[in-house]
Image 1 (cartoon, protein in one colour):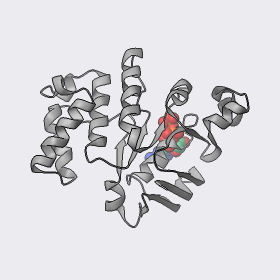
Image 2 (tube, helix red, strand yellow):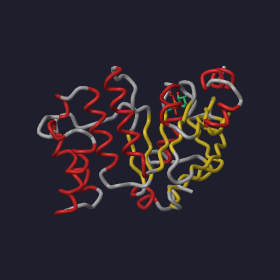
Image 3 (tube, protein in one colour):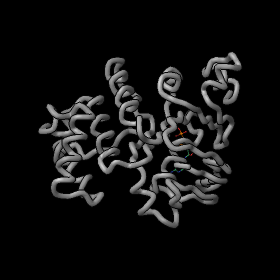
Image 4 (cartoon, protein in one colour):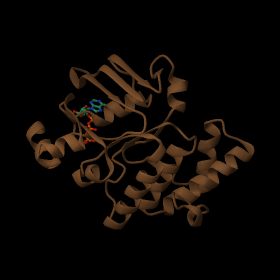
Length: 235
Ligand SMILES: Nc1ncnc2c1ncn2[C@@H]1O[C@H](COP(=O)(O)OP(=O)(O)OP(=O)(O)O)[C@@H](O)[C@H]1O
């Protein structure tokens, strides 16, 4: 399994943001992580990527426990956080080189990987611009390039297409599909068509609890649209 989450719980003060979540993601799957605002999606992703610690339960990425083997787990994952925090004063190329070095890349391996990421993410012409000068769609490309630069087995993307215009949205979706073709991808979104276009499976949370874990083909067989299923389970 690429991702294993068992009985994962996170409490903020007296509020349980996630409550005994258990699910697994197989190698190569693209899984849509859905739920209404505040359901606990970002909290789960932050625990998986080592930005938060769990109150209880366990999570593993590529067999590495995120709490007890954090360095190995972090190397196995690329993360695009919600709102894509970037250093706006850095140049695109400079930023990607900086992130590559943080992952231990150097010399030819670093230059080759940078070139591959600029090509893959369509950033070649923008590489000498400051990140702050880029449109939102191009900033998302930079966010994806930084998540991919160390060639992780797992990609975790928190609402990667929020706030994009329809053209940029289509381009970023295509990029996720290409970049994720040989990876395991867990990504959150509120756009149901996106899940239908990209995912093999959906996991739905509601108020911190898992309320559905199903392949899209099983959902379709039952004759309900994803939107109907979502509404029924999270109303
Ligand atoms: N740092 C924090 N301190 C206190 N409560 C928090 C904190 N972060 C999140 N929460 C709460 O935990 C719950 C889950 O939040 P989370 O951001 O994980 O949800 P989400 O499903 O990602 O929502 P959205 O779709 O709006 O991004 C919410 O009730 C939220 O207010």
